Amino acid sequence: MEFVTYETEGAVAVVTINRPKALNALNSQVLEELEATFDAINLDEIRAVVLTGAGDKSFVAGADIGEMSTLTKAEGEAFGKKGNDIFRKIETFPIPVIAAINGFALGGGCEISMSCDIRICSENAMFGQPEVGLGITPGFGGTQRLARLVSPGMAKQMIYAARNIKADEAYRIGLVNAVYPLEELMPAAKKLAATIAQNAPIAVRNCKKAINEGLEVDMDQAIVIEEKLFGDCFETEDQKAGMGNFLEKDKEKKLKVVPFQNK
Ligand code: DAK
Image (cartoon, rainbow, N blue to C red; front, top):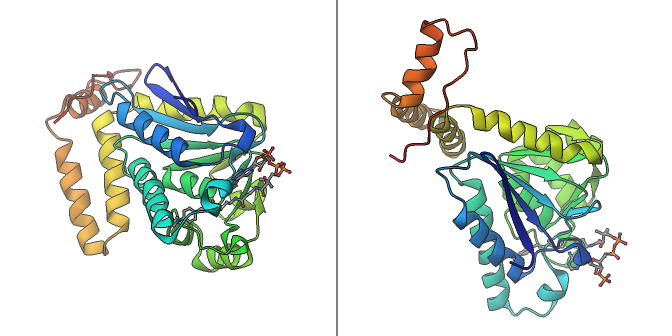
């Protein structure tokens, strides 16, 4: 891999987009390497992923404008599909993905962060969808995910006006969950990922699925999705150990961590 690095710490994986000369902009190669990296994650061992950008200035400064500038309509569509496929893979990845946003998150950068389950950022982070200034619409899901994550009115204002916002405003409108000094961002992201990784893996996966799939349908259908995924937890070792600990008044009240069982 030239532009993506992969490391693990226990049950936590860190995926870093590493193209600092172009502020980690997403060209075709970066997208392909990202997809291959996620495909190769061993889901029997890894329980949470942190996605970040290399350097101290940029998470991802967008799709690669140089590469996009000469695309034909057909090539533009193919590029959009490549991006959408990997973004959707992250969004529906079986385990939680945390975006640790360490600087610019513009265009495709904001969009890839919105494909993650949780966003936290550094104080120097900046978010925006500047596409209309470039003569295009957000093409990697920005019109859809931003409107769902913040209010439709705020999403429309950011997108129509191509207005970038700083970390404190991103926090205020609910685009990120927390803001840290830059040097504290990765430790905080890894700590959060490790906390998630301590919990029952089947239950965590089912929560992700229930929230994501439930948001796509009306409440009557959403509740049925939740019921199914709730029922799915029973008879697993995690459920037996988790409830057993409570009933046995296990002082630590911690889940006995069992290997994830593929069902
Ligand atoms: N693409 C390519 N290179 C980029 C880049 C980008 N998005 N952003 C920065 N770079 C490169 C710069 O060209 C420069 O390269 P050199 O000149 O050194 O070779 C290097 O990174 C450093 O950038 P600057 O010198 O500009 O650094 P500054 O600190 O002065 O400014 C900046 C940082 C982030 C404010 C500025 O670089 C900037 O405005 N960058 C562009 C941000 C942007 O507009 N991003 C959105 C891109 S549009 C679709 C699929 C996808 C999309 C749309 C449609 N379909 C096919 C459906 C997505 C579109 C986008 O993401």
